[in-house]
Image (cartoon, rainbow, N blue to C red; front, side, top):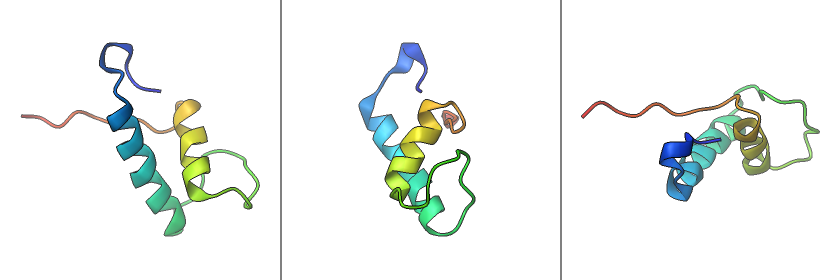
Amino acid sequence: MLDKSDNSIFKLVVLASKRALEIAEGQPKLVNLDSSFKPSTIALHEIAEGKVCYKKAKS
């Protein structure tokens, strides 16, 4: 999910919530899950399967 050297639950929550919002707004799902799942659940599955990641912002 997250880089092993930077395993932050805060980053996971932010990433999942942003992706869930995208899904709720109509972006296509990156995993095959039934549409009865909530966007937040779909987002977590996408992250767990490595289909969604984050990039560190340059300072």
